[in-house]
Image (tube, rainbow, N blue to C red; front, side, top):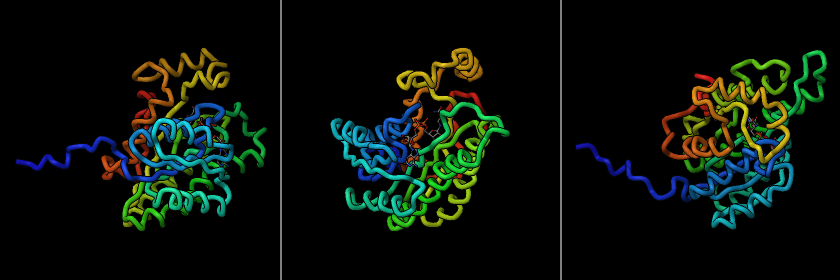
Length: 266
Ligand SMILES: NC(=O)c1ccc[n+]([C@@H]2O[C@H](COP(=O)([O-])OP(=O)(O)OC[C@H]3O[C@@H](n4cnc5c(N)ncnc54)[C@H](O)[C@@H]3O)[C@@H](O)[C@H]2O)c1
């Protein structure tokens, strides 16, 4: 008779764990980071809500629902600021177990052909998405290693699978994020740290307004191409994120996990 006791779930899957989510203010487009912070908080994690703009309204909303959360203003491209962000997890909550690298610029910019893509735009997208993910992992990993366990989830994009044209900087940055995920998974695995990419496609967030509704014919086409022909909303990503941050996914590392209602198969 197998021992089934390990299958009995505690009421909340992240009780006692501490998470940092970057780009977690109410963002200009999908506000995925705020949804990620809320999903982790609802499962019991204490959350450092980090962003380059004021993230206090998100932290306050989590506390009002009974969660434990602090806001940190950080530019993820600045090493000293990122180190201070990671230290805040320990001073506020005593440890750091989970890092969600979500901060980005470039997910909501208009298409730019190669000839018009300037170096400053390329560098900014790379700095926030790729250097920022590297710096956050660098600050978080030793703190996770002290506990012999940790989860890093890098937020990816299916534009990287498609090779979406006219967004070379964004698509290339997301390719780098996947490579970073795989190399970190091998490097940090011996310390018990799991590293995965959670990717999706165009997120429907009517609350964010014009960016999503500007091209209804494009939205209809994208919806129809999905195995489940529906929009993907920010809330659709909360469950997969919690899974990748919990012990339930401890056998999964170095992977590209797509939650896009079947537009892309990996
Ligand atoms: N929105 C989509 O359709 C979509 C699709 C696939 C993947 N994604 C990915 O999901 C994640 C979130 O996307 P989103 O659409 O919610 O983005 P968003 O633009 O709405 O939010 C990004 C957040 O990052 C913050 N940020 C920007 N620069 C920063 C810096 N230097 N330091 C700290 N924070 C900084 C912004 O202030 C903002 O709150 C990104 O990684 C994005 O690539 C989004």
